Length: 501
Ligand code: NAD
Image 1 (tube, rainbow, N blue to C red):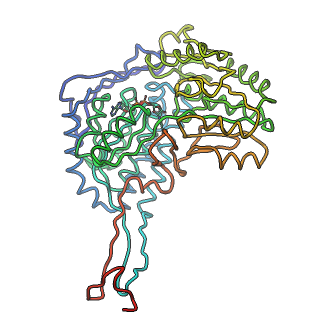
Image 2: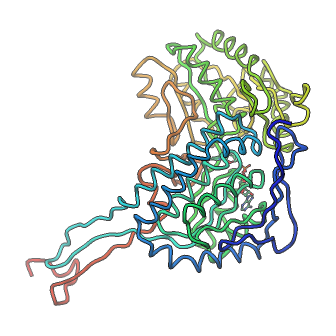
Image 3: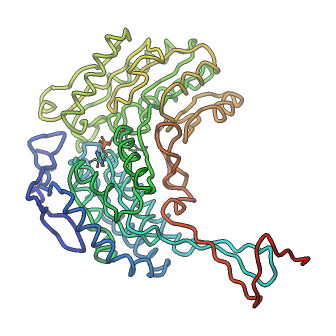
């Protein structure tokens, strides 16, 4: 079997120690391309494990928050450098554990390296402001301070990149962390955290508890976590938001997407087809930014559809470690079933299934969770396959007559993460940039491909107004403190004692 290695067995990582779960229960991580291959065995953590992790993070807080910012930056840079040296090993592990093809797994690791290098620079750049006071002999300025112990709960689809988007800036700002990675990709999380330790993050500054929603919920509910950074489904996000709301706890939610590519009559059609193929079927469609709606103007509809279907049929499905494979497995059996149920829904709704629509079982594929890349045509905006996040290799073609209809259609979902337009008309491009309701807009590129130096996140039900990455990322992970220093030697009352008095 390709890439098979001995299964790893580990405990939680709390206070620099490996600790078995309190309940003694464990779970396995398995290769979605070869379900028989066990990647590792991890504790199924409960509230007691989370409590120990929070206590450890609280203990480590004073030392870490008082560590100079530039020193914290150096530790993060060291972690990014180690990741760079081990990029290939990490990427291969990710393909085994999560399934995405090796080139994409390398990209996932690279995104974390980029984030580490970018954030490390904040160590010498975390500026505050000095502003004039309205009174004489009074100084006014701001500085950043850490939030405290924060909880990070992450999904499996970017097993190293997403944790890095949260944990690097959290550590940079002087917070300590309780990290609950996804149950489908715990070994990627373990390796990431081990690299942080090796880079010099002190014991207790990052504490990792493995497990499922029970552990995630305990991280959210624990009174010791002062802020929660969550990426995952909208359903889970709503539950977490409700809990955090009732506890007055800061919460940042990065949730689902139903992202569309608009293809105008004047577009470079070949480029648009290539973009749609990558956007829809990259990571087997398991990206929050996946291009699951293709909104195509009528004049090019036939040519676009024909080209897309023939390119889709040519995609090679298989184990992502094999050269030339385009589409790897989906993450697990539940997800495989869910994806297929959407094919049945699409057919029942009257959409035309052009290709795919079935579990791929040829030869070795039967050992894993593979789904044939699927294209529906004749889809209308109200259909469930045009509205609900499928999170698999399924895309839907929606015909439109005009730019106005294209924009209305693109905006007609509950989500607002990423939208794109293919056009060679500058006017169309700028109108779309202004009118598309999404946190990220692409012109002549698909809905995937974010870079870490720009903010990442969405409008509407994709989140609750927060953004990760980008130049202002520290605003999410730190508090502003405003400082007034009165050196006049007398009581000066703001808004009351004017300079004339
Ligand atoms: P999920 O919501 O099922 O799980 C995400 C994480 O939350 C996991 O670690 C899980 O164990 C934990 N969890 C589950 N229930 C919980 C609860 N009640 N309380 C606390 N924690 C809980 O999502 P998933 O299936 O792992 O990931 C796929 C989803 O993530 C998709 O909807 C996708 O769009 C979204 N996603 C969003 C972004 C973004 O940045 N907007 C990026 C990647 C993925």
